[in-house]
Length: 154
Image 1 (cartoon, rainbow, N blue to C red):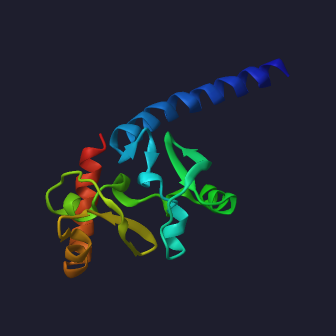
Image 2 (cartoon, rainbow, N blue to C red):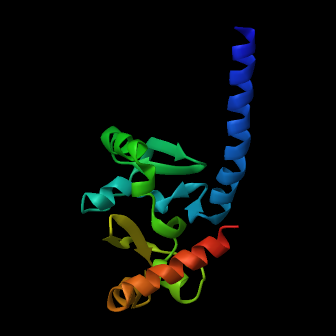
């Protein structure tokens, strides 16, 4: 019994040690303010067709990044499959990451869902990069953004 308890404590401690570097890396690389993603928009609401600003009343910490939700139902939906709802490229502008490799702020209502993934875009000063993304070769842009994101995540 004692041996099982010690093994369980060791295992949980080891899992926690491995999770800490990943969480710290995510915090360094994701587009957040005070560790809150999506400028407080509910990630599930994008997939419901209408991005909605939420509050900390329904928050959830996923691997060091906080997400806000408009309802407990949306928070529970996110918990079931966070990888589906988290924005691509840590919430940075997908087009800019693809074309220059830079991380650029986004306008949270400038978005596109492609292949069941959430992409966000810069949209300020008459420069809507979502339009550029849509006009471009999606597969090439995505491949470039994936490569640049992987390079910058270290």
